[in-house]
Length: 306
Image (cartoon, rainbow, N blue to C red; front, side, top):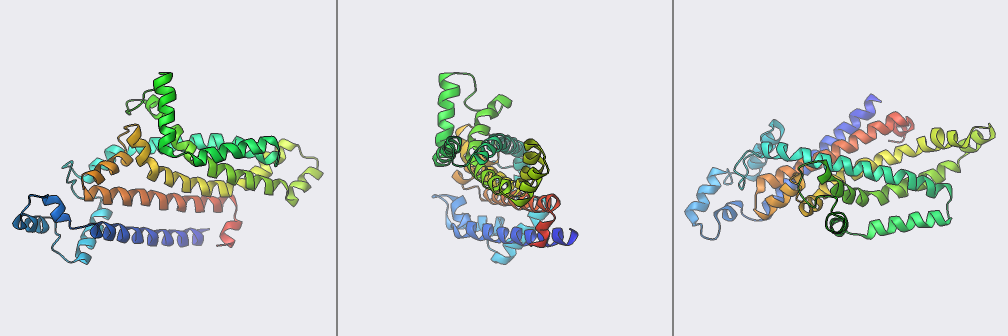
């Protein structure tokens, strides 16, 4: 178990290192930062002053090393647009995004488990086709369109939920629902497929032959073996939720990491863009690592196939 966790941790660190390199180089390839900051009216002297001020006149490897040291020490630089430390800015916005992501994942799991299990119990039946239709519609609906539909229904027509803002928990209901429906189809497909395979396996037939109740077989045998892929896909989907929160937070005016990223991009605030990309990617990598270790605890056979 320990060697498996160490191998996965080393691989995760290598992935994080690669992400920092790609993030740094892609932003550098987007154009001259000093010229962008100087604006259209900035002269050559002012552009040169900005280069020296922000260390842009140094070799790329030195710029990357200085930035990387700042990342690991918690110093992500100063925001060009907000004129405050990027670390303080992200810490102030992070709770909103985490609340949105956790709420959306809870909704997705609460919808996916019953629908996936019901569809697996009667494959090829009308219920299975209806669940497949729900999956198809949810997967084909863009997340921004789903957000607008929810606003039209609950905020404008019914008037029972606020359309924007993050003042209270009621403000998160529609954003969490929109983001949760985005992840539901993938989880339903995994649960349905794994449950069908588990119910047709030899150990389930043996349990039936021993006279175990159907509920016991379903919960203690079939469902437990379904948890491994569900944990894996849920961790991946949670990472996607954090990254995909840009659209939802912008539509519902939730001032989280996603909305901050959109503001930083529109204002050419490069330190904030770099920081948000790295932080969301780090969340994704850490969640994947945690899912691998949790799956190993649920099913020790996982480490043997690694």
